Figure 1 (cartoon, one colour):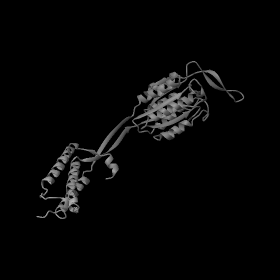
Figure 2 (cartoon, helix red, strand yellow; figure 1 turned 45 degrees about the vertical axis):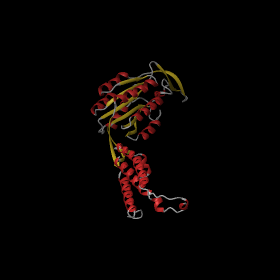
Figure 3 (cartoon, rainbow, N blue to C red; figure 1 turned 180 degrees about the vertical axis):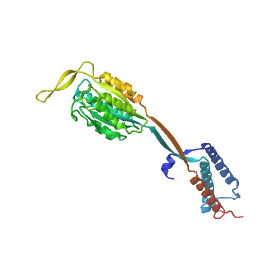
Figure 4 (spheres, rainbow, N blue to C red; figure 1 turned 90 degrees about the horizontal axis):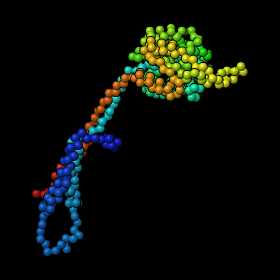
Length: 336
């Protein structure tokens, strides 16, 4: 057993250390016995005895008592049962499969959320991913068409990288809510998770796409997918980029149009909820609320194993006793 092991040692029965209080008693008894058994003789003067050599046997005889004390201390420590523990955990989780379907149409560059709707949505989505440690999460983007940016995965580092790379203009412009929902459902179609979730975020009204939103809703219901819908945008008008005839972009105040009746219907009929995010704080709160509503059950079972380390101490005690016995009846044997 190395030194590092002794640094983490603990004792199962430390009450045996009270026996170490006998060591001072034993030392007192040994010294008293030596004085009692010393031979005495009367001489007229010690002058002639000065300078006589002292036998090495006389000098080393206390070694027998030292060996006995070491053996006693080792036995007491062994009785206290020194041990180390090793804790292992078995983690069982009922994971949830989640697909985030995010609108990347040009209107997502509106600046009623800072710095704009899209960047705000990406930021809170990354925080949401960090909070879902044991869940599989995927990413779908849509505007005039839809695309799977990242299949459902537990590799959240890859997912966040893919999320950070999305931008407006990656797909044809428009707002194909039906296709965004249908593609997200398709990613979950073969999932065996106990709960299948879609977070559908948009800032507009369905105006394009091969799949009608109500058709996508029926598909989601058929596969028992719960959809949380988020409408992003303030009430009234918001500063939004507009393309000029020369191709340049200018910020203009434009009406915020979100098909809230449709979003509410999708959420209600699939067992989810609809939320409206009018600023950064409310968007953060929405993702936190969804995180609370869809908690993953994680069971952690801890196992603690103990390893006993009394054996080396017992061997040390036995070795000291044997050495003392051998020395006592050989080198240090008293003559009759």
